Image (cartoon, rainbow, N blue to C red; front, side, top):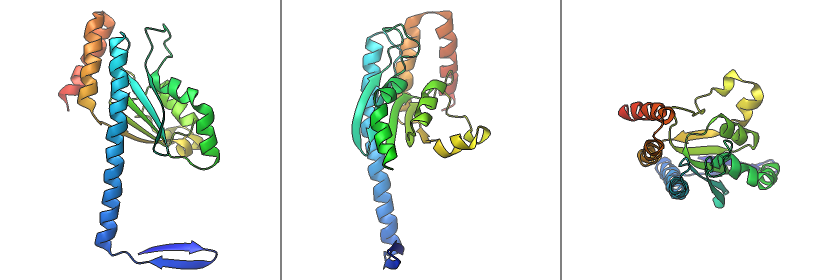
Length: 201
């Protein structure tokens, strides 16, 4: 049974429990389908990034179920260590995000192929991103395990919902492919972290 209050009046809509459960399951299924759809687009961006010799990370920003933009890492091609797909994408759409947040339309979702680092997570929090969906965990630079309760109340209130693991094996393969091509001791050490993580899946 659902209750709606309008101008002091209470409207009661009776929905049998089985049907209510059915509708909730259908809504969840639709959201999961959208997650797959948008993550596939982010993976395509990551693949292009790999082809360009860059760290293979792609990101897609969605506001109210509409794609606002796509981005991929340019760490090496731009020779800029801050050229992370997520941060660049959010900052390019900063004004638009802000306009939605001001009007209390806060369904702003970031899809990224790799668990966000501290910079990208911080940029997401500052822009009131409501949800982050990532594919592969990052045992080297991932920051989503931070507990906002150990920070201040402001972070607790602004912290996004975070969901990980969608297509993680496919993105893991992209990451390993990139690291093997670098053929350096630094990347070999990072690759060991990824392979150890993968062995526990």
